[in-house]
Image (cartoon, rainbow, N blue to C red):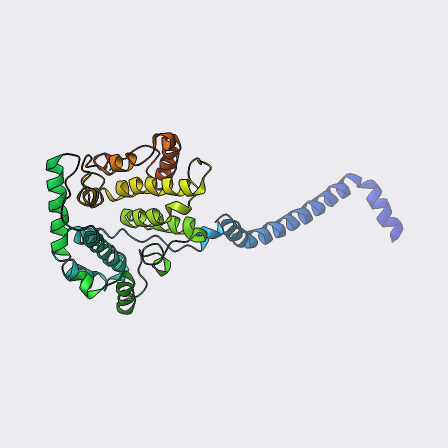
Length: 304
């Protein structure tokens, strides 16, 4: 029997070789199919891991940005009685009401602290009259605010009791109610910018500017901090669209008698020594860029 098999194989060598090749080919295709099926089952998990690893930790844990509180901003600017606005706003934390209630309180406190009697001094008499009228009007609209809430922390406590976590207010009211901190300054500014609300960005940047690493240095940390804080005043008024004839420049005119300028840019620049101007300009450009305004001056009329 074995002899017959060997004789058949010798006479049909080509057929045997072809059969072997077919068997080996089938086995190879079967192995490849199994590998492809195994890889396709694992691909979604591998893709999810790659996508997760591509997201920075700081962004992966960050809350989604809040919608700009356009309605509240309009109410904040136009409220006939600030005490009524504060009462209504503090019940609307999901719209940023606590932030705007505190901002209204701070504005009323600033008016009271500066007084309402224009001092004779340098500058345009017409602007002095306009500044005094603006401050006096706000003073009337702020009636009873400080009597009801004598300190900002009193109002903050009331807002926490009436509503939940405010979508615009920094954690623990930092920079608005409690002092800003060096170790959290960068994170607080980033969080404020993510809200999409320019008023929030303005207030948080103003509160934290002294701690930020922005622009060049004079070599004196104390002078650097003062220059950054002045630069932040300009960026803040640009963000809030109230550089020209806004409340801050009006209060400066009424309080000091210096009514030579009706624009916050010029008021601040007049306070920067010429020897420090170049370094100040680098700080201002850096803070503008940080706020998403670009290094140059942004005018409200040019914004989309």
